Length: 438
Image (cartoon, rainbow, N blue to C red; front, top):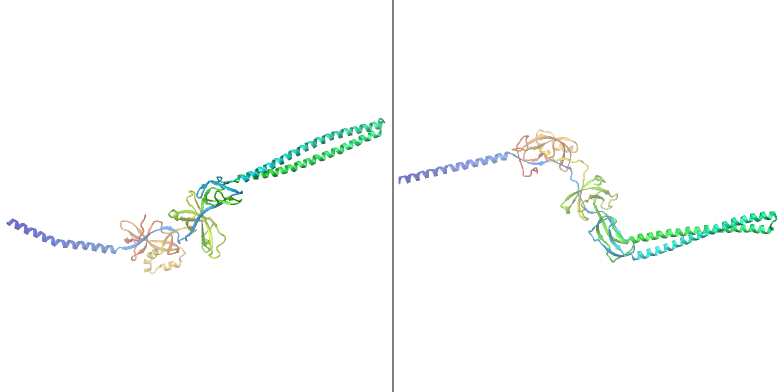
């Protein structure tokens, strides 16, 4: 009984001692948390950005629509009914590929007629050549007769002088010789006439041969052959339609390159040159960017809107870019891009100097386009982030940004805003708006 009472008294003592120590420990923990918060509050929060190479001003964006590099109309060169087409819209064709057929019945009939006329003219030439040959043979016969007549006349003249024959016989021989000479001249003239007839007939043959060749060529036109390699973009005629010479059948687009035509203000035209690089984004390809170039600048502006059409070409090696797609075009700036920082970073770095009455951001802005010196705070990342004051050389400024000519490298982190004035070497706390390296 005595032991039981002793145990109860001892337990009550321990309970009372623990009740006294618990409030004391809680108070100490609360005091430590409060001290940590006060210490954390004493660290200056800052916004930090990463230095990047970028254009100083945002380039304007233009919208346009993709179109093929060129569109060629395939037209019928002959008259006739369209019998067949082996392609449809969207099909890929090769240069020289036969893709249609026009009825050639009329062409075959015309060719047969031309060839028959040619055969007749060739027969006429053959007859004329035969006549020339006969006339030449006659000339040769008459020439021999003339030689014989002249020899007979000389012999009769000699016999007459010797008194062997009468004068009448001698004169008759001379007359026969003269007659033979006239006959020879007439035959020679006939040869010349026949030769002229042959030349005329040969000319008609040459002309008719040209007509036959043309008819054969027209017959080949009955086959519709693709003049370029590309994609069928439109089908104008259907099999069964009657075509006239020049009638359009298909349109073929050359998609080896695509074009985007954008309308540029005359005030911005001075910044665009032929051959200049351009970045083209296509919504159809998840805003994928393609590099193109300025191929042509129209010499004429719209009289009402004062907008000038500018043509941008994009390579399309894989032929995946089609026609009619929405394109967003940015023209590359001719000015070299440098590290650009916000004006607020300069303001943070100038706080200390303003307190001493030195150069402030207002004086900096007065010489915005001249190289000038300024100071910014850069971040030193360690166990505890600290800031260091660094001198930089500034260039041009625009749209709240300033070019850094020297003193800051791409990838370095710098302070853009601070909860209070900073001191070199001070430990800082990065805000949730701060940029973090990827």
